[in-house]
Image 1: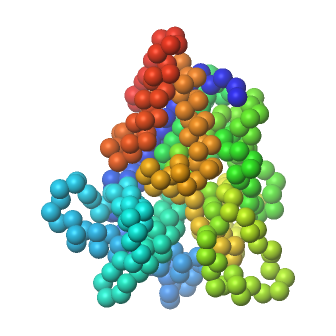
Image 2: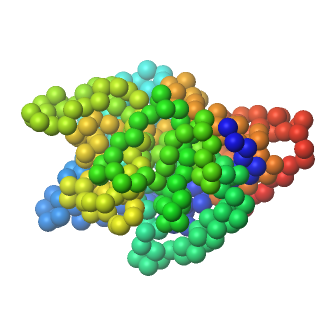
Image 3: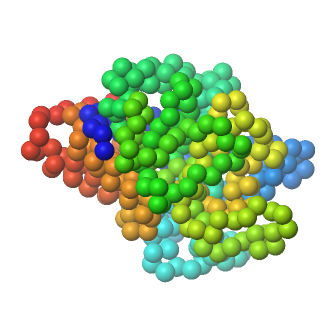
Length: 363
């Protein structure tokens, strides 16, 4: 692979300036979003998006699960916070690994696999937004983001690797406005593109073994709102598909939605020159029609064991850090919950001992 001299590590702080939540304040943000969506798109609202019932249902299930966990963490010996998405997601994954099958929520029991899916769908709802497309409405200063891209261009995009723990597509959107694609470093045997709109262009390419001039690597360590996998159990509405419906892909490979929108999706419109995933009803097509769920991964040790496409991404992230002369960290706090991140940094640091002197910048 081509040499990448600068590795830039982006945490949630990079997107927080674009009106997206960091993990620690996710709870408050989530409740606000659920209330807004219920009023605008819920039953009797007059604007019932096709995806609204699905998302509202899973948002409420997420809140119920948070309440359940909060009940059993009144004596807070582990600094657990029901407002911290990282705590919620990791604990749910731990329960699954340890064989929990059901959880008692209020007056009914819920299968844990449904709760995990609800978490992923609700995370998708929160992070598929790209407020940068309308900075006046969201009171966002987009200028620093544009300056960021311009600086990268001066260094030469082929010399840049971007590594992020974020799920959102703010970075891809900013690049797209400059006419620049990113390179998701995922082997072709592990993914396929899935286009929601008639495909004309894409925000990304996937060619990790073929360095492309002026296209930076973007390693999304925990998945992305435009990554999807086929669920293991086929939903009933797919079993009852009507004749003439689009044939389903029966593989379990990763599907990447990276097309640039040029039409509406069901009842959702999309801004011009934007990723199609910005349409709220995109999740209706992907989940209810095609049977995909978001490939959003919690920060646990199981992630590299269970997902071969994630191993591709982490391998490229490690290679990028090892090859880089300079590391730059923006908006990342090194949370204690993700031991893998410490191991990744330590591995790269050890590999640097035999190389030239390098520098690390925290921003």
